[in-house]
Image (cartoon, rainbow, N blue to C red; front, side):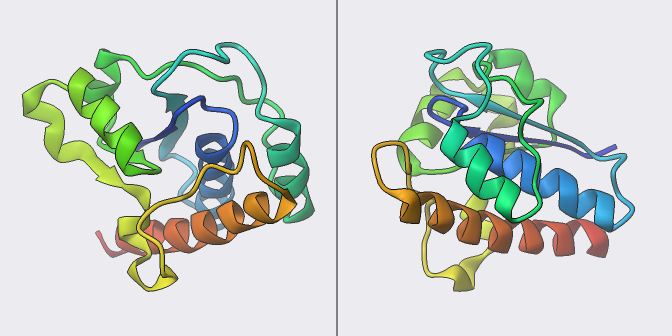
Length: 154
């Protein structure tokens, strides 16, 4: 079984969005046996649902994030998951500090799966406007499509 973990800083905007989008795409493709989760490099929001704005924008596109709860990224995640996909360079650096050397090959940027999307990172929309949450969805959908294509090709 393939196991995928998405992570960002607080696990309330970008990574839960990626988890929700990927779950839906996997279900549509008949690959819902693939495990998907999300976490944050900081435990600021442990146990909280995704940001209401993330949920609202995702819901408009048919993704339900409501059952998710924020949790911190922990060292055992690197052993359990096959892919550990970060949203930006700062969080990748934080994750690399926690990641045992033998699992560093699992650490990647999510946007590596959407090279034509025009962005190497998924920007944090938390302090911005509604447009930022829409941009997150656009980028995450593109990257999840690329990731899904890679998984189907295996």
